[in-house]
Image (cartoon, rainbow, N blue to C red; front, side, top):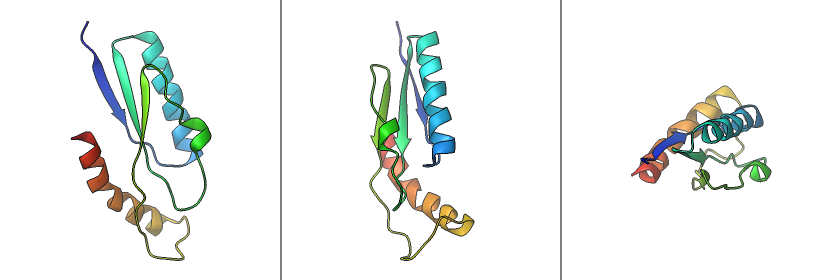
Length: 95
């Protein structure tokens, strides 16, 4: 049976990561051909480690930290810069 791999890249906040993990669980329970990789981007503050435990069909890949201007706080400009900095890391992880 051919595996289908899906890659999810949620924002690194509980309101995005938790539903992403739940939908990944539902998809893999519904169809065993699905294998899901969830890329984890870590903000320089906060922790999401408790939600990122691998299972047989769901794998978590933590991307390396990125440097954003010092003293940054979670705001729209910060998030935009943070996400732009993640693009090359995601490309490298997918290839």
